[in-house]
Length: 200
View 1 (cartoon, rainbow, N blue to C red):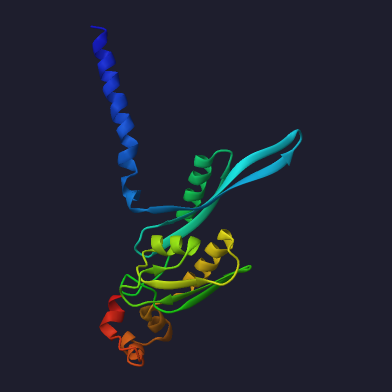
View 2 (cartoon, rainbow, N blue to C red):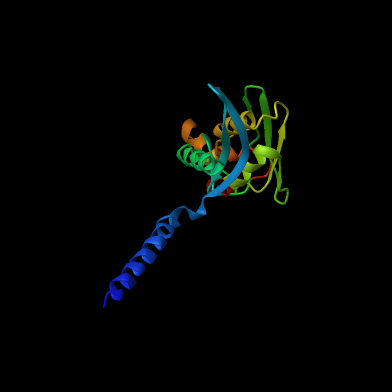
């Protein structure tokens, strides 16, 4: 008779273990990429104290992306802190046809300088290092990127975000000018039609 309550308690524990997985299900579409991890040392009385700094990039692959950095005594904790900060600082970037940028962009942060250009279908993500991680988590499929400054991952990430923040779609430009998208798209020379611009 004393064993039956134990079975019931075991079932409750089993349900509790499955509960967090169900609660985290809505965030399953978030893409997380570890860009850089560095061991840092602080000199204290009696020696040096080591900790780890992590740089993470997260995105939903549909036009939202963010980055964050965290520092802790252990690597998993540093990654967790960086991921939480990245999710809080996500920005939305308009994408053309849900695959590339609307226009070229340049970004600079400190000594880090980057350049990004929109590309035709089938080009792929031509970028390296931290810039590639940002563009892939953002959901960009065709883009050409180049870094001409510092290779420091922190500067490259921030320079990439500076370039993405100035991206604007024809719809946003038309609303600022008080015009229709068709009026703006009629002046383009690359053959893009107004309906395509409205959809993107």
